[in-house]
Image (cartoon, rainbow, N blue to C red):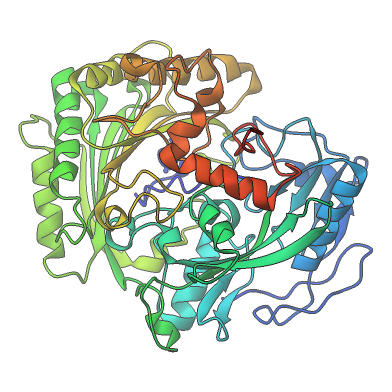
Length: 546
């Protein structure tokens, strides 16, 4: 199912700021099933199959994902350690007529895997092998591998990486299928711009579950299934059990040349201002400058495409506004580019930062920092995230709405928004080449609130929903594609976009997420999931008959 992509600020701050911000190990077989052949990457026994039902001491421990707002009550949690186990689990679900949902990292922003209708929760977390497949000349990543594990293994073994998110606990399963982006995307594009192939367990029209391999090769008869996984979101067509990664145009058999080189060092600059002296003019000036810089410096091949910036604005109750920039420290002129960026974003803004810090660190240290994927701490695990793509800076009325909502009396200290730099090499790919239709964009906007207690659900949800509706009041409460807005990102799943109470635009959620690519995604759905086995609140719908 779709998972949180990233929460990728790369900002060196906690998940409060992010959402608010050694090779594969062998494991011991558990459960009643027999051990299966170990993967080539892991070199050990495969975990599973494990079946956990209510009453088992493991049930509640395995039940929740990262967002504690959502908890289902499936008949069983099936923990799978191989493609064969996944196929058998899906076959069992189909045979017994039970709804199945899939979880790898568990960072789903919405109630897509914990829906009460789900009777089998398929947990792929043990499938976490990362390695090189010489036969396909591509790197193999299983869906349960966390991003931190992917980065560490790719760097350790071959000195390469992918432009994914900065929260190391996010699982590859949902992150890749929804597109995937992060601190290196302006330089290297989206993760799926490097996706060579997928292995997917699908269900045929007769109810048979089987594994299919689909690649981007022009003569691959299954190529449409590959295309659907280049941004079509997880949980729509089948269960991905393996990804293969190789950059488009990469040639030869040297693995170190088949994906982008990993940076050696990261230069990061952090400036933090207190809300105590933050006026509306100052805040809107920072936001407008941030947007204008990205309008000017987000063309493919721009010398500034290696610079990644985030403007993280807490609610006034949170106390701070933070500007973060980071860049490969070994790029020519890196230090000067950061200096110019900070200068341009703060131009005309009469504020003195409470903290102004620049430092250089090993790139991997930041990308695998423990805890970066948690929302604040282990207790604050309830959150609501809403998002939008931006083709240019927010308009005057939108900026006024941001200030109004970030200074009202109902927002909490862990509420706020982020503007996240995008564009660059992402814009070098045609909208139809992958399932990601939003290619002519320069930023992403994220609206968020994080809290601890269930008793505070209603107040927090009301705040962020009204904030978002206010910013997009001119287009029916949602970011309808146009000159400024360009819909939203499926990995930042938001069921409100499909709710007419919050989306009064008349533009359906599937258009906001997929634009003109949606009919093609429907055709893929009809071919590969004709029984509509894989579905959720924001799922690709089969095309209507006739």
